[in-house]
Length: 603
Image (cartoon, rainbow, N blue to C red; front, side):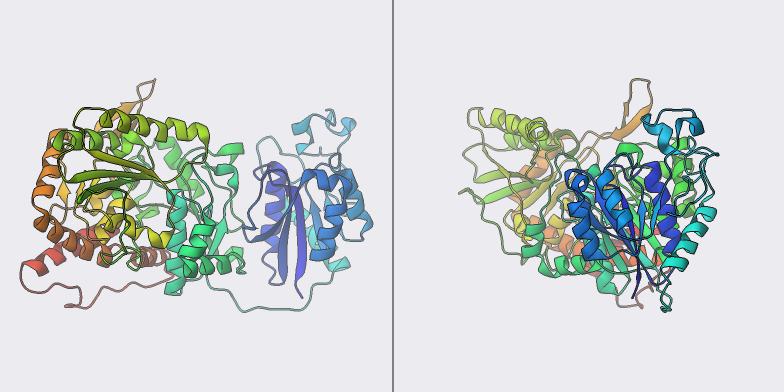
């Protein structure tokens, strides 16, 4: 029987001072092999089901006022000790019920005006009891912990408060004499699960690949406060289209692990998160934290130093993303490239093709979120309209996932609709299809095999999984070999676009925020015509691209790199003669592909 410690706290205020206090205590208590940590999460924000190694049970605020919901939850979960981190002037019926239940209650004392010189209703004034606050009493209360935030220096040291809690547990709830074998180091992968955001998909695939490699990995559904308007759940799609992967992730959600012997990998865009959370992540219970980030931006020296202090490693999908951190002073040993990948079973030339609603025989394709400028949708439409007419047996297919938020959809997909509408309205315009649809993971290969050539005249990308997926499906690719895709695009197996030198984008104060390039529109027109006229050559190039992507750029290989960084897996080079480097031009090209792939792993 394991000791069950419940933390009753706000789901909407998980970065608050009281939440930090509870995490400090739970983290220390988690060293006990016989502990089960529970979070009774109060608030209107729907929390994840498993977070930071803690099982989560949501409590709507209106139900806690009557204490009925809490009564049921306590009866079901039977906590041995409770940590109450909500001010007692809120949800008082719930607190009174908890007090009467006989469960040892660890709650903060309420300071009086005389103790801290401020009003009870002053919000932050109640974030730290003054030095004159009463010592722990019969109910186990103590002042808030000192030192967790600059404006909360009162209270006791965490070790002293923990001692009170340990004594209370030992006196009232004798810990069972259980010992567990030391746990292996787990990789705890944190992002929003089963969403259509790119980093959520990266976390989903990497976690699956780690589990299949035998690396102890735990998925955690990160807090929805970081959701963006275009992000939505697509768990039903995942469950039906990739049932094996879905099952592995669901099973890993409930896996027990020792937070002190775990490495938490936060998948997050580098930016200040909501509600004061650090870099868009919530601190984990464990001592080792890693940031996996992407994007296209510069990094100042100050933030680079902060990141180096907060995270053991900064991981990025490409050299383009990692380079600004290193240039800003991040120690080279703290940075590493862990690329994105493809699942060869889901993306192959044999993937059943999607049937597009057109009678045209040859189809160019571009698929991505509808960010027109970064992805180069405007250039694709312009070049296609110049290269072909209504009389040509060719169509352009533009596909984007659905965007649920009406405002965000209008500013992104709405702009793309207007762009396509203007092109269609010109006399003799070629056929352009604009599709907005969601497709499950194992159905996405057909998106590519239903077309004949993939076009992506990007201006800047952190990686660009769609290019790699198109390559894996055997499509010839026309794309800009700059930023993230420069790691895996080569004129040996793709039609690479000429482009300008990097152009800085500056903020109002003149600071360089990011760089982009301008692809050569005339060259794009030429390449689209060339591929249409030389389809046999293009297919051969696509076949070579497929072998490169499906061999050297898989999720399994990326997961092996991630595990090897933390010495959880030893990756040995293939014996000589096993890397496909046969004699002749094909072997030389394969060897060059492998050399390019290893270069991306080496930084």
